Length: 113
Image 1 (tube, rainbow, N blue to C red):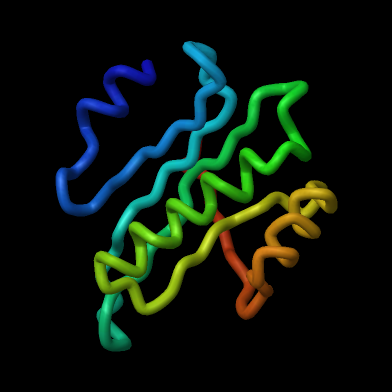
Image 2: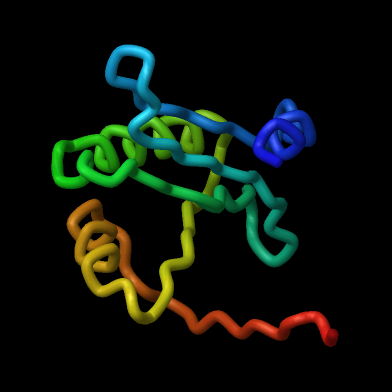
């Protein structure tokens, strides 16, 4: 599944960064670029951030987000956004500590079965 997702990434529109301790992957962040039709520039969306159990609170997430931000700004992104579930209060504090804030409401409709 992951191999297929990686193979489908756009060369100029997607990036995936990993953090390793030796040969062990301890974290991953992925970013996707989307054009903004209503404003200049484009949007960089963090589509995933995952840190291996037992490796949280060691700076891995902060380092991955820093690399994701550097890549996003280098592509000319006007802003970076991400989604975090309402129940993930600890994750919200983490993103806020990095300077992220809420500015809109996300509406979702699932595909009918």
